[in-house]
Image 1: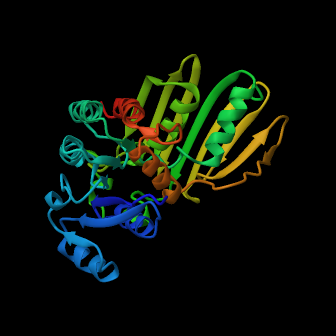
Image 2 (image 1 turned 30 degrees about the vertical axis):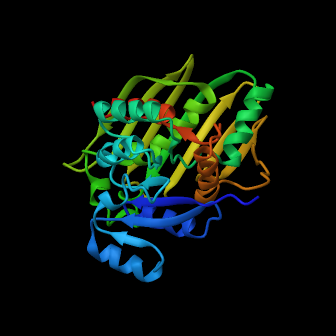
Image 3 (image 1 turned 45 degrees about the horizontal axis):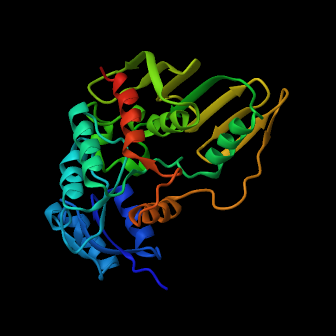
Length: 317
C-alpha cells in the first residue's frame, strides 16, 4: 500500500531554504506545495525553476495553511519562534534550522508549543544522522573507546561569513549570527548526543568591530569530561572543522564534517564508513517518519536544540 506524500511548505529561501527546496522537490516522501520568502526577486527566480509550487512573499500563506502537513523554517534564528509557534499551534509538523532561537523566551515558547501540539518538531543538525556520528556512538557504547578523557573542537575560517552566506547579512552580525551559532552548534549537538548535556565553565568571544565574533574560546563539561572549543576568523590557510574525542583505548577525529579517523597508538588511520553518509535527503526521510508517528534517535528534537542553544548563548552573555 502506497503512502501519500507529506505536503510541505518552506519559509525562508536563502542558501539553506533553496537547497532543501531542491532536495525535497525530488524526495519521494514529500510534495513541496508552497514556499515563501520576503524577497520578491528570490520568489520570481525560483518560480521559474519550480512552476508546480505556489510561491509567495508572505509567510502567512505557508504558516497554518490547511493545505500543508509540515513546514520547514529556514529564516534567521531570531524569527524562528514567530513562525514555529503558530505552525505547531495550527497542527503542522515543523523542521527548523539551527540554532533553535537566540533568546531564552523564544526557545521556551517553541518547546512549549511542541509539547502541547503533539506534532513532530525537529531541528536540522547536519551531524544527527551521519554515519560518522553513529560509528563513534557505537564505539563508546561497545567500550572500544575506553574512558572518555576529553573533547576538542577546532574551527578555522579565512573569512566570515563564508562565500555561500554572503547574501544573508544577519550571519555577519552579533545579534543572531557568527560562527559559534552557525557552526559550533552542530558540534555542540554531537557532543551532547554522545556524552550528555554540556555545562559551560568559561566562555569568551573576541570582536574587532561591531560584527560577529572573530575568535571564540570555551571550556565546558559533559559530565566530568572536559570539552574545549577554539575558533578563529581571518587566519591564513584553508577553512577547517575538526572534532576530536580522546579515549583511553581509542581516539576519534572527525574532519570537515564527514572524514572520520581512529587512533589506537600514535597514528591516525581512516575509518571506512558504509551506507548513506547522511544528508538533507536522509534527514528529510527521518522527518517524514517522525511526521508519521515514529520517534527517532537520529533526528534532533526540540529538547536537544534547546540544550544546544543554552550552551551557544552562554558565549554571548
